[in-house]
Image 1 (cartoon, rainbow, N blue to C red):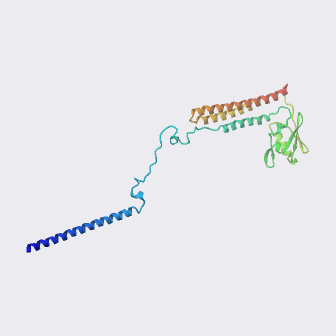
Image 2: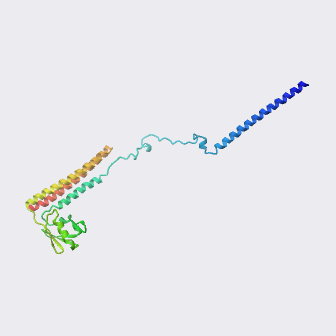
Length: 262
């Protein structure tokens, strides 16, 4: 009987220990479940990309395909061939010809023409102005020019401007008008003037060739050989054009001068 009681007591203690262990296990499971739930909720309280470290949500740009004609393989600038604008060099050449025309007009031929005085600058109103701004020029006869002033107060200034010009003329004032005799040149004078024409022409051609050199130096810096050849040809064509124009101006002026010696 005592043995049965001891056995029953041992059984009860075993059940209690088992229940205690079960309770402890349940508590651990509950704690782990609570911890997992806490971590899970906190994880999704932030952006999904932070939870997954960006691996599932990261997007990678596709690499461009290699091949001819692909825009991604085209160099900066769209692959355009570098070039230069020849207009600025053409302007330099044209300026040389305009200067030549101006200088040739300064060389008198012995025949009175209104254009002889067009290039002259007159001191008026505190600045230098062209003759046509202060008066009109007309021809009285083959050896006499007449200047009619818009402002009679400029008579002295215009007389001084004509007398000091390279034309070597001797104007005289008559009232509000200025008369300018144009004497016939001697044979010696005509020869000197012809040489002056050629000298002025050479100066103009040197300026044209200088502009060509500057243009060719710029062309040489280009990377494309085809473009260089094309532009070099264009530069030479411009040069030939203005050199020819200079020669024509010189020939015309020389002919105009020498016919007075016949």
